[in-house]
Every structure is written in C-alpha cells, then in structure tokens.
Image (cartoon, rainbow, N blue to C red):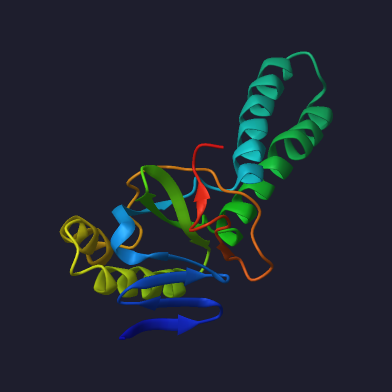
Length: 175
C-alpha cells in the first residue's frame, strides 16, 4: 500500500485517511474542498470598536475641550485600531479541509500552518486520484491553497495551531 503522507498523527495512504487515530476510507470522501476561516474575531471586534468610537469622538469634538478630544481619540480610537492591526497581522486565519462523508459534510482537518496544510491537501488529492471526485479538488489545491470555497467558523485549536477532526472520520459541520 502506498503512503502519501505520514507525520504528526496524520497518515494518508491510497486507501485510508487517518487523523488522530481515527480513519476513514479515501474512496468514501466526496466533494473534497479547501477553505479559510474568517479573520480573527478579536481583530474584527477591535476594528468595529475603533470605527464606532471614531464616530462618537468626531460627533463630540465640538463639545469637549481640545486636550480631552485628543485623549479620547487616542484611547477610544487609537488603541482599538492598534489592537486590530496587530491581531490581524499576527493571528492568521486557519486553513480547513472539508469533504462529504457518507452524505454528511465533515471537517477533516484544520491548521494555521500553510505549508503543512498544502502537504496534506496534495497528499489527499494524490490518494483520491483514482476516485470520481478528484479533478475539481486537484485543481483547487494546486491552483491556490488560499482558495475560499466556503467560509466556516472553527472550534478551538491545539497549541501548535492545528486540530485534527474528531468523530468516526471527522467532525460534522452540522452541529
């Protein structure tokens, strides 16, 4: 049996995908696709806070002394904007690997490591190359690993930024 990928608890052979000790047959996976999570939730909230605060500070600037307006601008606009910028730069959105397994959409894998995700995606594409659903998936994986076929929110990640799915083959998307 040919092994396409075997590292850190993930093994992809020509017949099986095994993640975290749980496996499923590769030929039962249909409609394989990649996606990215939306950006960091804290960054989005901080950006929204900065925008609303900017409107409030701008509306009250006529009624508040200039030194207080400057302090308000720095505290209520500048700090949230800085938090948003730093978080958006440092916390990268996760890469997600999705498939249909026995009629249910499941998340097979989630990680923030683009290189590792590319290796796993390509290995799974090669493993499923004998199946009927591979042509679209191979194009999506080889064209751009950042392709957003669908946006999904994820659950908590492991400390290394990746999270194998749980359940028989993977975590169901319909919780």
